[in-house]
Image (cartoon, rainbow, N blue to C red; front, side, top):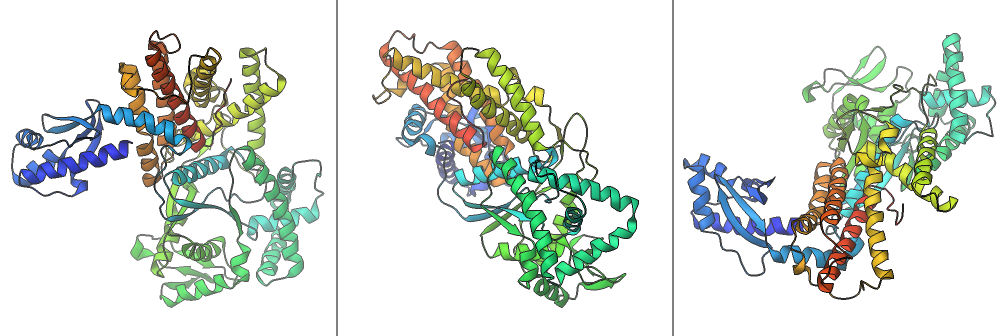
Length: 569
């Protein structure tokens, strides 16, 4: 709805500016949110600077030339110094209520757009996902959900490293040590991987065996490839289980080895050589990207002729470029340099570059994590801990409910707490995940938003029981005139613009912030305005419809965040 309001304001303002003798592009209107209006424009600032006029006087002249057409969402326009302020009219408020009620789960969805291929997580299959990995998963999955709601056709991929050095170590370890078949498969892989690294540190001569395995894989040795595949499959099986528990689903798992077997790695190396950028450095083949601003060269072939993860990643990106209109990668901060070099190399051979979302790391109060050293807390362990604590909270708050109810709500609240607390922080900022704070109902995290949704459901259920509301009956939204009612309607109306912003800037945290603010607006409304107890039955019906609208938009927001919306808590 807000996007339509902005579109109408754009049209009205451009026409008024033309009337006073100027021409502007949409981008020059410089709209922004304001505490003093629903929408404010800085166009007078820009025009006054260009045409040497007083911005305050110019703003007044433009406002005087504005004509608001019948049926517009704009109620009035005024000048405040050099700002041009737009205020939503009654039609906008009423239309928002009817749109939410009519569109339900489709409310906030954009028109069909391009096809996007989004890659995220892609953790090495040498053990279970840990807390450091899941920020990638949560950011990537939430972005995919936002982009889909914005109208994009999104395919989500996991790029499986099934042939690098770490996988050679895993394969070597599986032959050397016995797997604990009673452990979750990825945890069993981590156990032997950690043991293998201890052995390799003690006896460096074993590294030659690792190198030999890598060479055999590159030359297509069937038995070695089968060994690698078996180890990787076990790890990926466990990783998929963890991702599903986190409510993260990938559409496709793409194996790194595919691009070696298909000849794509050889082909892309030859194309890079043809640019004249390559040279030999200590026996290795490297790419000179100094004209792109990178002093450090990019190694694409080892001295023994084997390829690197980066080389195979270049081939993967060439393949991805053929599959979609846009490519998006979600990488940790340690990939900042290599992702820049990858983009530059692709650009140098005329291949579409990916858009890259770089995120800083998440840690626990206990400190940082390393799978190689065995210093990590797995995502599964974290979920178990958080879910147990959530169960205790539900048991305290709702002791009369069944064990099954407590378990279902605890799972929903636990996973929601993890996802929300991680995604609410802008990707470029590092964060420490404190699970106790994430579960605090008073901290306005996921449990607070979920509880707001459950409260709306409870109000509506009570109204039905008391025969105070029929959801199918027509209501008069113009009866919703209290400040808290209008604030709630306006907050719901901005849902589409938040989705649009998150999709354009690839920043999922804006939706997390919005969901909390929406819950605030709903709780403020319910605190100050009687709903079921309203004396006038028409006002009561309108307010119950507003509660239903809040329930719908809260549910849509939570769903787009990948978080469950319980009807009772």
